[in-house]
Length: 200
Ligand SMILES: [Zn+2]
Ligand SMILES: [Zn+2]
Ligand SMILES: [Zn+2]
Ligand SMILES: [Zn+2]
Ligand SMILES: [Zn+2]
Image 1 (spheres, rainbow, N blue to C red):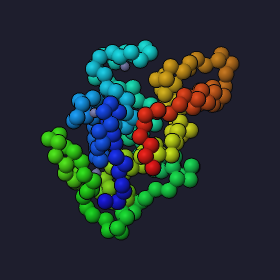
Image 2: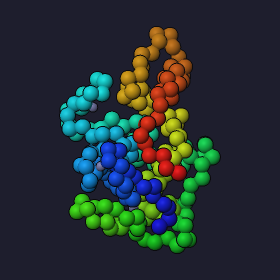
Image 3: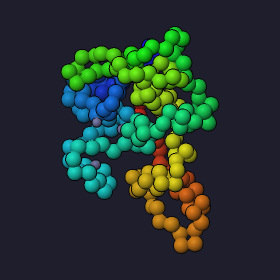
């Protein structure tokens, strides 16, 4: 295997898992049944929750901006750019030098049996499929507590501010660049996810 996956622990009972997150971030602890997001360890709620102004009627969690839930939508070059601007190294080649056809990261499938991912690997992605390569890059971003906000486009800054209930009112005579810089500064004052796994 090209990269080591940090062990994950249930935030409720601390039971340890050595599995990747795979496609679904909603994780149910096999020991205590606690349902949480494996990207940020925040709880999943079945109905509207106690979070300020929650309007989510169904199953949901509130994810911080550095949760894999949001960062998995980024393409690998953008995740790499975030690591590069902070001088964090990442793998692009398989550690043993041989590129295999199928991704061999072990995953827990629905029937709770571990089996290899099996998706096609991509060149330059450390011998992993794209999904697991993104997960690997995000684990480095989280380990180094990197804030994705400086790479946000204007629409992303505004959406993130809305999620965090940061006031997005633009001053009447405020220049767009000044407005966005002001929002970005306020957004970055909101801490990253407090429970995001940061194993090095
Ligand atoms: Zn548990
Ligand atoms: Zn899911
Ligand atoms: Zn999350
Ligand atoms: Zn909620
Ligand atoms: Zn894979």
